Image 1 (cartoon, rainbow, N blue to C red):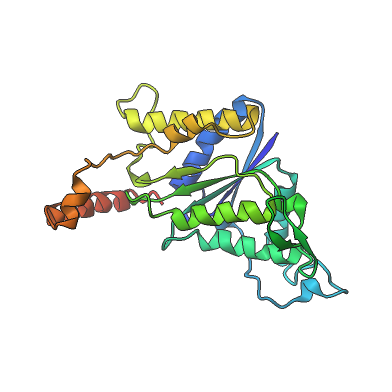
Image 2 (cartoon, rainbow, N blue to C red; image 1 turned 90 degrees about the vertical axis):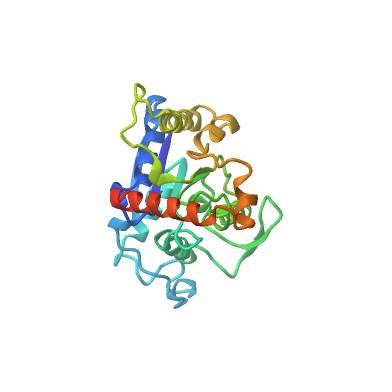
Length: 262
């Protein structure tokens, strides 16, 4: 089994996204998978400029940027893979522009004048199934405590699955990512970080052996690092303790930014 991770963090191999991908790969490699990570920050992917050259009879499915950037290289790797991990930080409530730019280049791989019904009943134009129908896992990374933060990205991938007939085989969401102790080990006292990391390793195993991440493993991987008491949100809505919590959050974020983990 070949697993390809596409990391769209601008931190490339130095960020939390790459670190978590590596944890997944420990389990996947243990079960015999071939694993590879592509860091989009290290490549040149031009924006689709809607020139329509790829839709003309003479240049059908050939992009004007072919051989001029790395999009065709990434597409080749995607076609060779059996499963894809799309890793993205949350940037301004959405996915990384690096990943969105890559997705927009799919246009040159589709005959947009031909329409079909997907297996999920969606009316959609032709697409390159060898590229877009791969089973996949979104890996969404962000520092905020709120579960609302990644919802645009999660919704995007659910819709992506419906229109491409690509099976969504697990969703990994890592909030409060800057608070992870990336030096944690099985013998450390950082039990939450270590529990999360072990869940990622197990998720990697399951992707190979079961072709999907179990709900239990997904829950463990997505567990919060900080659990706010149930009464905190109502208090904040009433303005009680708001200033103290804001100051505490500011101190936490200052510490996270100093570690420069994204």
